[in-house]
Amino acid sequence: MTHRHVAVIGAGPAGLAAAEAALSAGARVTLIDSADQPGGQYHRMLPDAYHAARPERLQHGWRAFDRRRRRVLAHPRCTWWPDTSVWALERPDTEEPGVPRVHVLRGPADGGRRRRLTLDADALVLAVGAHDRVLPFPGWELPGVFAAGAAQALAKGERVVVGDHVVVAGTGPFLLPVAASLLEAGSRVLEVLEANTVGTLARGWSRRPWELAAQAGKAGELAEYAALLIRHRVPFRAGRTVVEARGDGRVEEVVTARLHADWSVVPGTERTLAVDAVCATHGFSPQLELPLAAGCALRRTPSGEFVAVDDDQHTSCPGVYAAGEITGVAGAPAARSEGALAGWLAGGGDPAAPSLRPLRRGRDHGRAFAERLATAHPIGEAWPGWLRPETVICRCEEADYASLCRAAGNEASAGTRVTKLETRAGLGPCQGRVCGPTVAELTARLTGRPAERPVEGLPAAGPHLRPIAQPIRLGELAAAPEPSPDNPTPQAG
Ligand SMILES: Cc1cc2nc3c(=O)[nH]c(=O)nc-3n(C[C@H](O)[C@H](O)[C@H](O)COP(=O)(O)OP(=O)(O)OC[C@H]3O[C@@H](n4cnc5c(N)ncnc54)[C@H](O)[C@@H]3O)c2cc1C
Image (cartoon, rainbow, N blue to C red):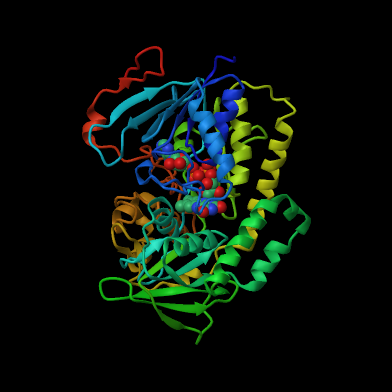
């Protein structure tokens, strides 16, 4: 027994593996997730109330996941907190970083009376994953246009279909599991459109082909998805995307067009297609609110910013480890390797243990895979060419491209905070989680300066800087926090 207490935030592939490894290192673990079941995005489970006869339908690696889930949740040193959102991390002293205090709300997000608790642990593993990124296009605010992840969550986690005639468009291998989930749930998928051209895909995927040998599992998944699309006669087209959604009150048709490698539209290639739903995805945005609150340094890559970790998954903040999609988008197997490594070390396990060798290898293969994904499925430079002045950029606040251009043209308002106030982009219910990276990118392009530069002596306002990571009601905020049953002494608010 190491007598350490490890709090693992997120019970997806990375967090569940972290919990298991920390337990086997001898630590006590509190495993926290805002969902009511472990599994994260990859092993999204149907609610217990559905009494599903075959919960493993639409799942890969279900048996191994199910074994791990049962082992972890039944372990006497594991406390499982489902339906629990970490809404803030509080550093003991901003000048001298240490393991932050965890602030949670326990209870279903839609219910009243959530309990507010705090938790102090000897180490934290952050494994909160990502959400999908969607680029704006004319008409994307119409009902019936979905982020592909949301559509998949409904299909996989609720068996609800978003439409009968659906187009799936964007870039990346995620297009395939989304189409598969929709087909399995009963939608007719008319087309799957990968915006990158065959040339870009071939260059990215054929680079250092020997490295792909380590991804045999992913190749198997890919083959299954391809077979499913063929069986359902769903065309997969590269170098084409949805550039406009149209409809009276909801989406009724989409305009698709062929794209050059930089994603500029090839003139005269536009086609219209009748649909009742569109699912779009242009990669993933890591959920960086909690790592930023903990004080973790980020690393910048061509496909965005991620948490910087060392060879042990340790962040720049003492006692805080990070694993999974927040450190790079490399898929579930890599998330599991990173999680196991992080959990073992956070739990006080021997850093020289031989069992870490395959985990480090898996993590390194995952990092190479992430680079390959970024090269094969980049976001083309010319995508803003789809925008029109009236195109909505922030769906929550209906801020349009023209207002962003106006704000960017005004020297006094070119900083992110002032742009937000002037255009209201990012001030709605999602607090910029969807439009934040897009607004930052467009502002930087329009002004020729990075959007997150410091203004008026305030720290730079990046698109992920949110001190409150999850919505909290004013009443909940006003209530004094209860001592966590997992902490020996009551905590002050
Ligand atoms: C919408 C979506 C769907 C995806 N579907 C697939 C797929 O079908 N196939 C595939 O190969 N890859 C899919 N991916 C990629 C996939 O996320 C990863 O490969 C894998 O699940 C990453 O594991 P993870 O543990 O890093 O994160 P996740 O699986 O995302 O797990 C993160 C967990 O953290 C929890 N969490 C987040 N914030 C908080 C908080 N503040 N408080 C408490 N809990 C929190 C979440 O509820 C979640 O359970 C999907 C990604 C997304 C965004």
